Structure formats: structure tokens, C-alpha cells
Length: 441
Image (cartoon, rainbow, N blue to C red; front, side, top):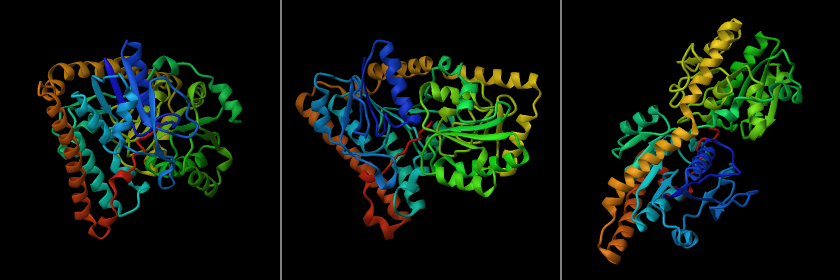
């Protein structure tokens, strides 16, 4: 099968969505399928076979993200003799618009993965926040209804999409992980490298350090915990705009000497960072899956997390960590205290439960689930609906229809935006929308 994956973000960026695209592509190729990835040009990117890069504006609105120029003609030429059997879009705008047109051009099904709660990322865009949130909800919902099939990373996201009016068929297809890669790590060596005492109780977090990850709340809670526990330390892996607020909070609480910033982590360093932790903390409300939670569990690390979509499917309260119903600093501290006080025998059970949970998210199983849906679509659904013997005129009509559908979707979304904020409506430019996508997962 020829699979075309189209994304607004990709390597060398490090995040959940980038990992998802890369991992699914790798697994599909292992299974004998050909995969081409369409992604933006980025600084420091490395040449990669079957990855087509397209021009993009860098550092959108002061962020680390790029905004592509969605040019269909250029992509069609770049694809050459590659005829996709399925087009899989990772975003509902920018390259997502182009994905819809390419699927129509080749008369093949379009699949869309709803990776992110887009409305939680509007702080990267100028304008009225509440109006922008409604705009992003309408845009992503409308796009999902243009697709032939939708993937939801978690059951919570599937239910949310249905409540918002998505009528396209939806299946839960999470991003998997290679559990064996996280089973062993040099935790003691990693601690020594960052000058963390061997007997310290290490609270850890890995991910993009950005406002939507709710890291200021996490830092305030952990800082209070550190004041109660003199041997506790905080280890954070990742980079981003929230790094300075994290430092400031730790300094205000007088515990900055026990903050360890490891920077961007990849490969063996990432695995060793997990193994250097005693507990992984998470409070993001913008995730659809929370890939880093599953990675930490594969390393046998318990989780303290605030209840949220994509989190509640993985964290089982009192079994593999604590799932806190409310975003409360007091409750978060209590969760950390609870875990630290667990007897050794009980802690072993918790760690074992973490690893068992992670086994439900193997990359091979998740990729096979996706491929089964691809095959069903090309055999019974989108392909048979779009493919006909009408010849050249049919192709022209399909192309026009695809562009009309896209324009209508953007118009509907813009209408929702105008109804919320008419005073700023003239400034709306949908091709400047940004999806940071979650990134770390």
C-alpha cells in the first residue's frame, strides 16, 4: 500500500505529534508498505528518504513552529510516480487543506487524526481568545466531516468530537510506543551527570515547556512538596517559553538549587531520564493522549496527573499512580506524599502495573489497527465512493468540489469567529492558524 502522511510539524522538532508521524511511518515500512511524508522545511533538518519538504515561514508569532505554504501543484510534481492509496492528514488546516485536494485528485480516501485540542493553543495567535477558541473548534469539526475517516488518539477525544458534531466514522487509534526501548535506562548515571543525589526522591517531567502544558501549576505544587521533603528534587527535560517561569517559581520558593533542567532529550538520554525519576508529573489539559505518560510507564515510573482527555484512559488512580479529579495544588502535593510513603512491596506492584499498562500501547499493535482501517476504506468506503469511470471531467469536478468544501469549511469557521468577535473579524486569516500539536506528547 502507498501511504501519504501530511503534517504541519515534523523532525527535528520533538513532540508527541512528530513522534506519532515518525513512528507510524517506521512501522508501516517494516510491514512492507511505502510511505511518503509531506512536512515543512525546518532549520537543522536532515535529509530523509521519502520525506518531501515544502517551504514554510519559520518561528510563527514568536513560537518555535512553522507555517507552510500549502501549494498543491508543487507537491503533485514532487510525488512523481508515487500514487497514494490513502492520504492521512495530521492537521485540519494549512497542509490539511492540501491533503483534501490531493485525496480528491487521486480519488482516494482521506483520513484525519485529531491530534490536538486546537482551541487550547490559541495563545500563539493574536485576537480575542474565546472567539479564537470557537473558531478552532468549528474549523477542526468541519474538517473532520470532510474526511472519510477520523482517528481519535483516545476515547475521550472520540466522545468529544461526536458531541461537537462530527458525523464521520471515528476509531480510537492511539500512537504506540516501542516499550522495549524504555524498559532499561542508565538512571543512576543520568542522576550523577546532573548532580542529583543517589538517594534523592526525584519528581520528573519531560515535554515541550509551553503554557498549554500547565507547567506553572505543576512547578508551584512540586516546589511546595520540595519544601516539605528536603531530599526531593525536580528534574525537567525539554525546552520552551515556560522555562523562565519555572525557574522564577522555584527561586521564589527558595528551592531553585533542587531544580535540574536537562534540556532537549532524545534516544537513550530520554530513556535514562525516565529511569532517573521516582515519579512523573503531568497536568496538561490540552492533550489528546499524553504520549510521555505512556513512555514513563513503560520505564516503570508511576504517574501523578490531573484528570484530562487522553490521561484518564492511561492513569488508573491508586493502581499505577494517582489521577486527581481537580486541579488543586493541595491535592497534587497529597498525591506526591502518598506515593513517596508507599512501602517497597506496594511500590513494586505500582511499577509493575505501569509496565502492564504500557503494553496496551505497543507501536506494532497501533499501526496494525490503523492499517486495517486503511484497507477497509480503500476497499469499501471512500475509494469506491469517489472513484468512477467519468473520466477527465469527473476528476475536474472532484477537484472543484474539494476546493469548495474547504472554502465552505473555512467560511463556517470564520462565521463562528465573527459571531464571537465582530470587532476583530477583518483581521482573520485562516492560513495563519497555528497548531503546536502537542507535542511531547
